[in-house]
Length: 477
Length: 95
Image 1 (tube, helix red, strand yellow):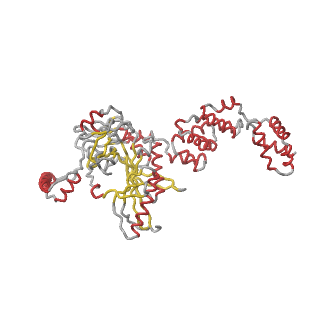
Image 2 (cartoon, chains in turn yellow, red; image 1 turned 60 degrees about the vertical axis):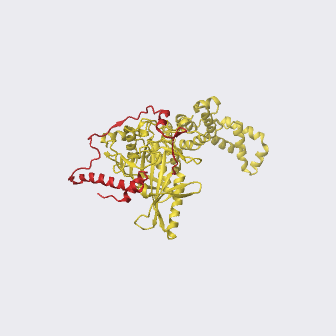
């Protein structure tokens, strides 16, 4: 096992979040009744012509720029031929020798290290329809709503060496397309799909082994499990004297194994040629510059900025930069009150915890960044204690109200008046002579009991630092 | 230009066509004739000519990302020989 290394390349299909299809006017929405989003182009009716949706090209250029690709000044749409009922034309419109983007890379964090994974290309293509194979009857049902939904395919270099890197790479791509707002990143609905090319070779070998393609890995977990399984299977075949057959395999999550799907012998003969119905795509500098202006801060940049500027823990930064929505929320809060560490903690523990519990997310969050910043400010300037802040936070989450208002109306302001605190201490001491005795006899552990009692009597409003100080003085005197 | 029977069989398979012996021979002859005809083009000197994929000299025809009305299902189902539960019905295909 340790004499071998795996060589892995991923092809990731990303469904673009346009309103209409790539070459037709029907909607791209999912979940509609079957065949309600079709039109002459989608159905491949004779005499109709495809026209490219300009936003598709904008999105592809945006992705290309975000992944350090070369944007090609001229690219061509090509026909890829195969017969399948969910593909009415008998060919899929894709790109072949002149794709829109070439030669990019993304940096992926694996363990503590950063690994650069090269991108061979990004090209445009159309999705196929969906077929349902019935068990009871010898028929399949075809729904063409998805046919013609725009995709980009991101093809990586064979730079990936194990399942962990593959998973990290795919998560990184999902994060990027979501930051760019070009794909909803919904894995369950197939907005991001992955095929993995896996081969193994003896360590030190320069030639690649025979590769096997694993199709349709539509979750991070499937990608990782399928690759792990496939690497072991291939090493097993080779070490027991067999040879790897070039083939397409499917991941079966129920049995936890990949199984052979079909021989590639014929499937490979796609007879690509330039689609005469679609004109060459010419992209000039102005176009690229205009798209560049729409690029947001990318996850990698946000990660670096949060780490360097705010000196936050890497794990916290990971959580804060997972989504653009979260990083903007954090930025906004910090711009109003400069305590990044505390704000980061409130977001990643209390806020995320509560959102999780309610099964909702930041888009529907009742606590605005302004209010969260104000809450932390109230703690920092001693108006409320950290403990009371949690009560205030709960109230903010319930009502969407501002913390200052809640503190005032509920009378939660922290008591830092030494006189008042002494009064409370004295009352507790008078009421508990036995505990005072045991404290004086050396059982200093009961100190906590006194703190608890005073807090209880004052509804937790007493400044804890001051309380500790005064209590100790009183008891020791 | 001679085309082998194997090639004809392969093309038939790629096109999802079943050919009997007689049809196979006929196709072989016809495809060979077509290829011979097109073969004349290879006599034209093309050195220094840039490969051309489109002859119009026009580029960049786009549409805006605007959704328009789709065809009603009642119309769509009329073009299908078999249409059930809102779907096109085809002989079972195994993925």
